[in-house]
Image 1: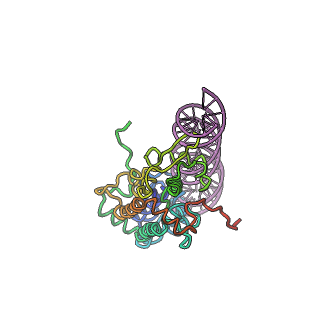
Image 2: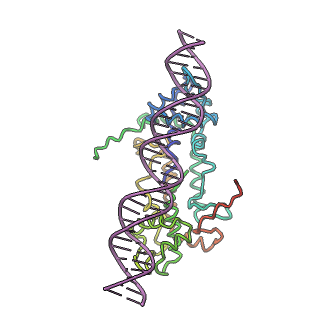
Length: 155
Length: 155
DNA sequence: ACTAAACAAGATAAATAAGTCTCAATCCGT
DNA sequence: ACGGATTGAGACTTATTTATCTTGTTTAGT
């Protein structure tokens, strides 16, 4: 079960980072990428839709970068993920039916509706401030830092 | 939000069809594919793991095909989906953390655990018989038939 | 004004998922 | 035993996602 795309993961991590730096001016895309272990040039592409949606302000040129526009309490994970993959449009039928309205529902319609509803509610109910608070309380979680290298001993 | 892969969708549809034909001998892969509007040769690949897991019996040669081994009341959607994408292994962290145990959890761990838990419970709690019953009660749903052609008037 | 530094945007490449094709192995009916 | 019909398994193609590269545009500082 893949909940959200990797782009969305990166977007949430980057926004969390920027929320932590809120009020400290522009942050370089490159720095964010390095700190979080996100492929450098790729992050640029990911931040773009966030700028378009008015979640980030970007400035080019020397001493440019990205910074949050709103306060972390005012930005939800739903907004961030939606910018990456149009959640509202995607929310498709679990069983792939082209039409799966309430009249013409698939067998799982009702149950799945509940599931995805609560998933979206989770995203919409969590603000960046919530995530930042979590990071402060439990720094050992390592979030939103770089995904640890695969240091397993397997061949 | 992509819940399950398309392979899993096809697998569920095909199994539903075979459940409807339960007790009527072998069904041709080709027939199933045509009836359900699933790419023909692809269905072969999809049915394979279901055979390996002991959910289907297959027979080659003339008058061969596929048929269900167990009764529809004894097969859950979880088994079917798991055969396609190893659900138990996949169930990863929502935020892409490599390690996301209870000690070293990501900010969404607890909530997301609930979400995916209830999703898996949904799959595990639904038997093919449930789906077949639904199809009998609401044939207008069109399930598990072919996904209707996109007949929209859009350019 | 000039230049270095940064984002913006489009083309390109690599990785993965979805789908197709080919041929071998197997089985039934005659 | 033979021949056609069907699954099984692997290589191959196509589509989508993820990631990189290149070039252009904007900005600050000198």
